[in-house]
Image 1 (cartoon, rainbow, N blue to C red):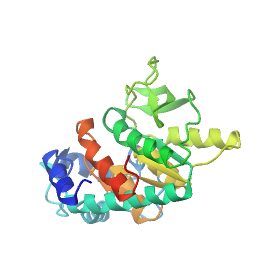
Image 2: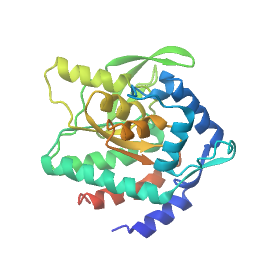
Image 3: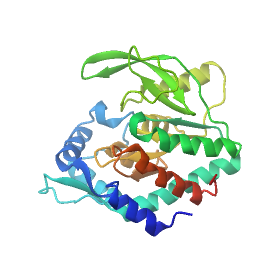
Length: 271
């Protein structure tokens, strides 16, 4: 059993919380773009209310612990580890509820290089508990707008976790997926399920567009988010994302293993 104190120490030592690598300038830029409803940072969310930059700064201070001072414009951003711990507890409760119901669950990540191991451990545990871990639309192509123009990616699954492959990558089972914020992959997956009259997920677990895209369509969604990802926290504030966990989403992949153990302990799903 990983104690709360031990996890708090790990969060700070690994810079998952506390002063993180995400620059304050990057976070503030995301808040400006979100306020302007730039689709690159909306991640598939269609906010119900108008969110100005000051509104977003206040929300992110409440949800993540970043400074609410608009004059603080440089340096590393900060995540309050206490807020991370509270959110991880809520995350574990949602997993426990899915396990009790034997709910079908979909996992997806836009950060495969960093977060694949975290999600795959959860997928293994939920599968062992009797949940159906969904893997639809394998190989389906999705056109995503990038800074290099529109590029075609393919949907793949590794240990039950969806990701998208870069053009020309055909290595089954590898984690060499693309970093993406797009909600188009989760929309494609759900469209494939509906078209085949298959089983829709009752819970989507992931990050970026996987969470916001699913939540916008009315499916319960939980996930991890950095200080420059305001969409998940706006979704949580507006009731379309059930849990958004504030955490740096780009540290070494092995640093997320204690988080997985912690939420599985909280969900009584430890293997």
